[in-house]
Every structure is written in C-alpha cells, then in structure tokens.
Length: 295
Image (cartoon, rainbow, N blue to C red; front, side, top):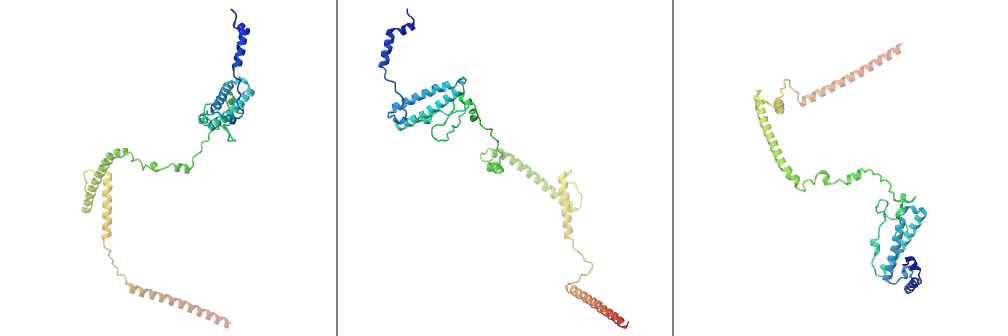
C-alpha cells in the first residue's frame, strides 16, 4: 500500500486538485474604501474578515520573544485594522445595519483596568497597545498612574458638608430616640421635682428658724447643701433687717436757704481778703518809691 505522500504526488490526485481549483470562484479582494460597498451583507462580511485578522494578530503579539521591532510593527498593523473596522461599521450603519460601535471592546492597562484611549484628532478609536506591546520601553509609563496627592480640605470644604443632621436636629425623625428618651425623661423629671420639693421645705424651716432667732436642727442632720440654704436665708434676713432700720440724725441739718446764705457769706469773705491783699501791696510799693526819692 502506497504511502500518503506518494498518493498526493500521483497524477490522478493532482488532476482532481486542479479541477477543484478551477471550479472555485476567483478570490475576492476587500474594497479599499468602505463607501464603495453598496450591499449590507457584503459590508458585514468584510467586517468579519477584518475581525478575524485582528484576532490572529492579537494572538501573535502576546509573544514577548518576538522582539521590540516586530512587536511595534504588529501593534501598528492592529491599529490600522481597527481604523478600517470603524469605517466598515460606520458604512453598515449607513446601509441600515446594526451599530457595532456601542459594543466595542475597551482598552485595559497591565492590571486589567479600563483606561481612556488618547485620541487628540477626535477621529477613530485612537492608538492602542496590545499584548506584549504594553511592556515596551516608553509604553509602560503611559499606563502608570501618578500617585494621587491627598489634598488637604479647606475650612470651606469642611463647612460645606455640615447640615442640620450634624447638629442633631434630625435625631428624632426616625422615632427611635423619642421612644428611648420618653421613660428616662419622666424619671428624671420626677427626681428633680422631688428634690425641689425637699429644698422648698428646707427653705421654709430655715426661714422660721432665722426669724425666731433660735438655732434649731432641721430634720435631724443637715447635709452640706441644706446648710448652705440655711446660711443664705440668714444672710438675706439680716440684709432685710438692716434696710428696714430708720436712720436717726442727732445733729440738726441746714435747709436750702441756710445753705445759700452760708455760700454767699463765704464768697464775701474771699472777696474782702482779695481786696485787702491788693491794697497792702499798693501801699508797700508807694512806701518803697518814697524812700527811693529821699535817697
């Protein structure tokens, strides 16, 4: 039995292969411009062909041992096919087909996070890096994010977040706090009322003891606060008694007319003294002048 290689080289097998190639249609070439295609099915077929070419090249570019130059060439070819794919997708939409751009794949960094593709021109998907091309010199830095500096919040930013809930104005809206505070509030109110009643009774007993002038023991043993109350009541009663005392004057006080007369007399005395002093000065000056003339 002949081997397979010998079978392939036989005249019959080569004749059958030539007949099969003749029956095949001539291989169609993809149009250079997407606008030349007028059929939606043809446009979808050319798009699928581009997708298969991109898939093959993306698989090939995963190999890091291809070298820097080969990786860069493969990456350029993939980006060229991507731009061509966008043209065909736009043409499919024009012919009434589905919009494939909405479900297109996103670009990711080395950690798998989706990143924005820089595209200053605003046309097409922008330049992308695939596989081992992301680790090339000068490309890795593009995917590294600068460390985020923690910005210190200003006073304006702090107060901007403050609302009514910060000051506790909304604590009672849920109703939970009211239920918990209700019994505690009633208990504290009852305790305060009892303390107030006891203090009022102590004040009344202290007033009675101060008015009578006797030192009596109130309710057996007085606490420190109760002693302070007794001392305060004694001080108030003492001040009140001092104010009520009448002021007795043992010397007769002058009235308004008498005061006016005394003021007038005092002014007269001052004027007389002034005139007398001026007269004496004049006499002395005249005497000195006479003595000078005699000499």
